[in-house]
Image (tube, rainbow over all chains, first blue to last red; front, side):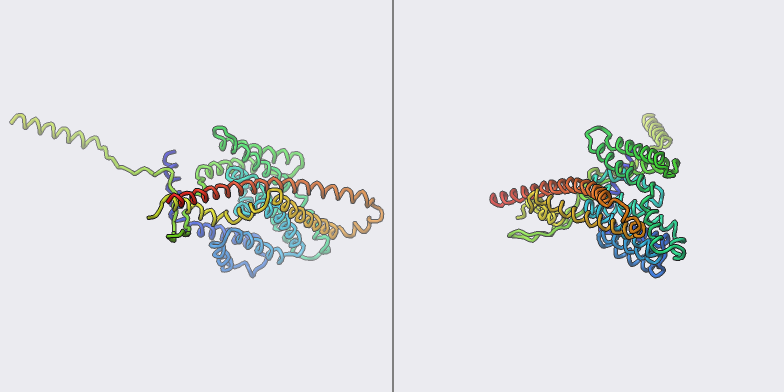
Length: 327
Length: 129
């Protein structure tokens, strides 16, 4: 445990020292992963399905605010879906409308959650999201999770029916549009997941804020159980075809991830090195404020204890002193 | 001679002003009722446009069915039902808006109060010097 705490302090000090470089690199990596995933899963428009465009977009995101990444991802998705079929574009636009109504009104700064939600859904571990949002955010963090989930389910429906949607023959445009919108809005799995995640965020946040010992650990436990129960009850009531094993396994992995996040969590807003400029009547000040470290890592002292040699030296000195006495 | 305490305060204030300060000042420039009222009006407009858009899309998608049954259906009853759905969504959305923006306003006022306190202290120290 002590080693882990020391490691945490090392990471913290490393972050504080090289923050100016780490943040853009992490943003670049996130952008690269997102754009590559979008292109590999939905690469219907070949013009933007190239590593050069992905690299340029990721580089752009690395030094811009996260909102830019949200915008670029939305544009990438829109272009790919537009290349596939017009009907899906209309449905995606309606999903964007939902995002605007819910996300941009209530929690426009939680871009990271909005971006990561579809990605974690794809990796089958979305269950960590409501726990993390409840632990580190506010109840409003439910908004980006709900929006991310809606976008994921719209995209997975489109990707799942790409062949039928892209062929362009058979039914009329209106009929296909109707099919897509029905397929998306009557997706019971989506509705159950949204309700379960939103309730979990509120629950975890509520328990985390209580003044009881181990409130965060209890919040993770209760949140995980509530999530599983709501999903399974929803499955039983509305027959949504959840895989019970994947829900339970995913929830356990999600809870473990939440515990790891909780351990390594340090309040980034306050741990930042800040550079500010101001002036008074006499001076101009250019101040660099470096955050204090809470615990300093202990210095390592290597103590060699070799009993054999020590005994020998004691023995020698003993015999030596004996000899001296004899003389 | 540089007054270290003063530099410390000014650093914190400059950091706050550069980050949340601008927004907080804009928010705290309104009375509470005015600010929340304005946000409620924005939310009302947004949700009305969204509802109208969704309803228009629904009409467009089910155009044939709607046209076929428009003469036989009870238009008043359907209208009442639609209005009820709209009102329920509107009320939920407005309550959420009220809660979120009330918290936002309170927090902004609190942060700004701390800033002003620092400012007063700073004035005080300058008088002493």
